Image: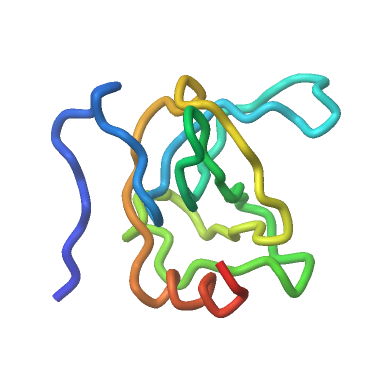
Length: 114
């Protein structure tokens, strides 16, 4: 039986943990704007976090991992984790927690060396 990770109260006191999916305000690579999008938390680095972006676009490279169970992770549609690009964002960029990756999805990302 699958258990869904759904905290009842989401507050700024919650700190992102590895393999959780969060909504975060991510600045575009060219610093020309930003977008709130889901990210996978990899690790904390001082006051910032290393994350991977999640998109609803189809996989484009061998480093893109299609989630087997995006609904378990708290996402509303089929999603892909862009493993080719690690981003660094601050704690204040996180807006809310969505959920956590399934074991199968974690294994797929770990197989790429994360």
